[in-house]
Image (cartoon, rainbow over all chains, first blue to last red; front, top):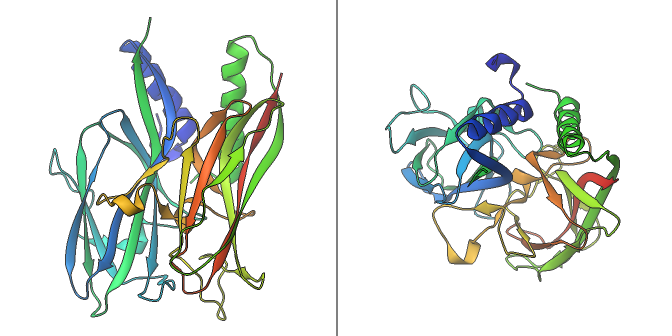
Length: 154
Length: 171
């Protein structure tokens, strides 16, 4: 598969074929996992652990964020760094903390993964945000993708 | 990055092929379903709204668009619509769940009993020219229904017009 020619539908079709080869039928359902930092304190570094449900693997395809201040008004470009770490492998998805707005978009313009990331059921990942400003800000992250429900095929 | 139109058309093709493999030839029609959430006070949560699927055939939900309006009927700008006179509300939250089995389409972390299943409106919806395309379409049978709830975290009272874009499948 040419990852530069990423196409989610084709990826999911190919993944379904892989599951079938292992004897499973798969049903996909869109799903969003959230990571909320409400608030992310002034100049603070905070973690949130995202637990993947037991019922299904999760295929992450795009990432969005909402930033807002204490009045509920938007903070469009929060000066915040993000780090995402797989808890099972301790592998980080970036070489160093990266600007939040570089790897998260909005509902209208999501940040699309160049290759969908398969996160196994019952696993978890940790999101670390570092606020570079001396003012608290509220951040809600949304990790969008599909749940892959497996059923032993006939 | 795949242009929006190709992603949607590709998914329609995938749906069509799935049915064709079962011997069913589909006649998909563009269709949209809208739920209007009444204006909700600052900090309040709306009553649960019900959206029933069309009776004529399966509905395939592939994208979502939303518009937030103030008490006076003015459009409250969303994040990509804002201009220099706008204070775009980003904090309102939205819950969508399957009415039949109560299954949520989202799970926030850390777990919060009062916010279970709520995510920011602006993270999972777009507008007509750029709706939020679901990573995978959802199929509904006739008379299935969705339940929707809106929590207004913005600084002004807001209502929500939420449109589910998709195809109605007749055979």
